[in-house]
Length: 255
Image (cartoon, rainbow, N blue to C red; front, top):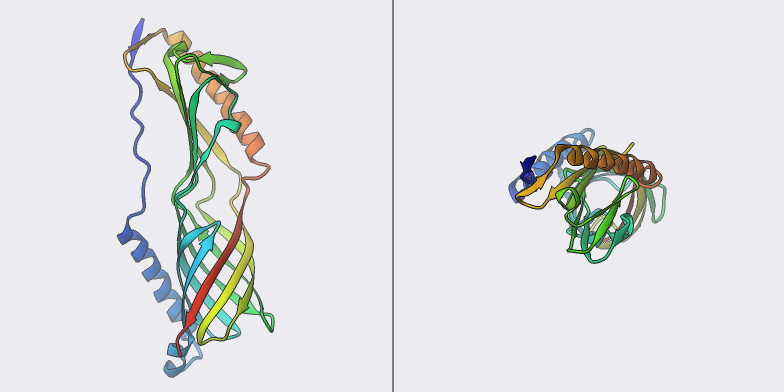
């Protein structure tokens, strides 16, 4: 008989304010260099706009550089959202189940005028964080893993923690509706999709501290967790290959 202590989960990496500023600064330097080709210095100051946006890639600032025909954009979004994850697992009884979406989102891209109010564009969407789900069972509750019902305490189980990963840097395509000129106040609506690639999943057990669990039961638990991972990936692949982009914002252009 082996006394198994629960593994300590490492704290997910959180992008600090300094790192966010650094990423945006590098992006803006690159955009500024690109936009300077063929443009006199006096024109560049008239092509800068500062924006605030909110949507499926978070709420935060954006800076754009360019002309009325071609505009280069870099932005950051904060999305501190936790959802109820109970519907993604077969749970009996009382349990805490949460699903945390990626918190930090960065964009670098360009868009092009189609004339009038409409623009099309693309670029890269970067998310350093993962989708994290966690289920904690109360006494008397149970969860189905790999076709086997695990009640609280069976094989020392207290809960599970899962992560869903996919491509961190995702190409995106987008169309925009922009109201207002290059100078002064304006509004915009972005609608598009980012291509995240094939999703992967990882499930880990959360054990009751100090529980005396035979190794054979732990091996069986790990095997059933792997079956649950495979089921999740198969189902999630239907909709997690893509991330929708829907943002509305207000822009202020200088010049």
